[in-house]
Length: 397
Ligand code: AMP
Image 1 (spheres, rainbow, N blue to C red):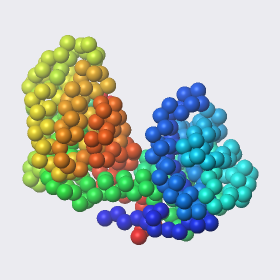
Image 2: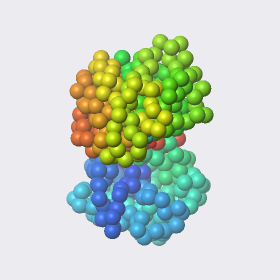
Image 3: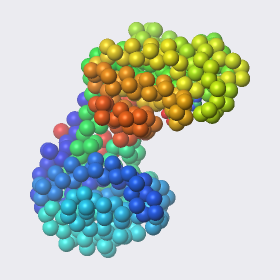
Image 4: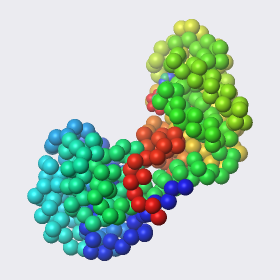
């Protein structure tokens, strides 16, 4: 069980606290178009302000690839955060992130003040976990707080390297929530524990399937990855998405499920079309009986019922990956059916980040889920059973 020290376990009064946030917000013409990530960061920041810390915030934004790009400056974030917090967030506009402005601003801080550093990815070393930038960041602070789950699966200066040069490294509230929900679900779930996997490729979720088969009571596979399973079982799948290199693997997983007593469910019917197009004519066929010139783009109505029935008795459900090409509304019905089924059950429901989180939110089921992870890649690695470098770097309790 992961038991990391959090902001509730430390005393930051009068101390310089560097907080790694996830302020990777969408920007259009210098304006923030979705401020969810800023709002989500507020509880940790407010707690540190209330405790009398000198709060120094840092984050990456987009991919400036190691050099200053004015359109990826965090300046608009400082302005909006000032409004959200009701106090000035001083922006340290250094191209080298930890430069003269940042040093002077930190030097001048009183308890409860807030400073925001420039985009950490302006520095080349950031994504390589380089020593110099890690030391620069550490030189600004006495305590480090990591509240950026979205990058926790990467070892970068601002979430891992810096912790080597700071005595106290803890997690913030957002990070704690992710660890609690994902960690508990995978390692100590209330049962029955059901995982639903979808999305395009088996290859990107190999380790997730393998790891979850050791943990779950039922594993449901839908989306594009299901066709590799259908073909492996001898079905015809027409021009559906398939990874021929993974047919043996699919069969191994089917055998493993049997061996472990895991109920493995794959689609029993499929919505097919001859073109990859929202308005394409739809034909519903039995799974594994797809015409040569057609492709499967969604799970069929019987499968929706089968999957919805399967989750009814669940006490914990983890879902990652859409059931079909949900971006096209006519092929979103399978994904909607699963979202609806999860919204209606009395269970801990956890949505992996990325597409499934977007689908659940866009379809209006966001507030019906127990937890929607903020990190796509990071939550997948959690489900793979891997240790996340950004989590591992925080002090144990
Ligand atoms: P992933 O990034 O692997 O989670 O995959 C998400 C993508 O899988 C989405 O963009 C979906 O449109 C796509 N997808 C889901 N089902 C299918 C399918 N049957 N055929 C092609 N793409 C699919």
